[in-house]
Figure 1 (cartoon, rainbow, N blue to C red):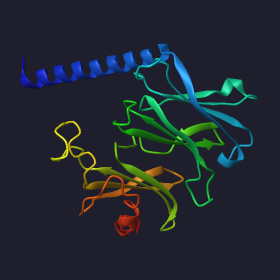
Figure 2: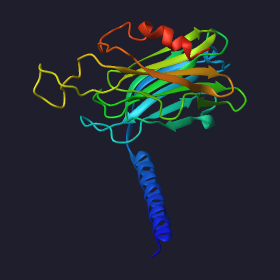
Figure 3: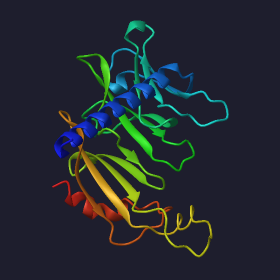
Figure 4: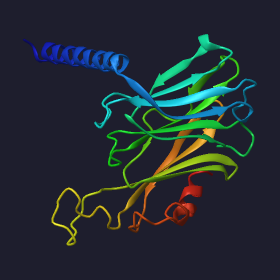
Length: 240
């Protein structure tokens, strides 16, 4: 077999494998038993004239960890046929809230976070859902698979340099030599780290789009509450 033909065959096999795995994951999600962990209601604050119930669900495994994607469902008593449910990245519900993400120029959104492994050690995948009056559906305006990693932090700024901004700061690494522990899996977790900053700016047409990133020059303690504020000059420089 020629080299080009072999490469094409391998690519076909990989594509078929990806499709099969995606199908299996989807089938498992449909078959899974879900439980509601958090609910909220929203109407005028999200730009809707009717009241929506928003429910965050995860797999009901008893004492075990959830294995399939979490779900976010939007429903309305007066329009039961219009229920909308979305599968999201992450398996364990971390947070659900109404978030005013702009300086009152746009309605609020529904912020949803789901953790990948349910123990707090994996990333929290983020999605921000806004109500579209035209389609009367909810859509996510954050980038696909946007997440904040373990010991990372994030902040939404409704108005920063006249823009609505999301900043995510993640530790560059979680494993560094640390004489305080002999456990390699936890070595250095709570010691200072360099942080990688990702900055996203909002536009009504495109949602939140990354405008830049940078790495801190100095290490920061993971418990530093002023981490993002301490890098404000660098953040603003990306918003010009």
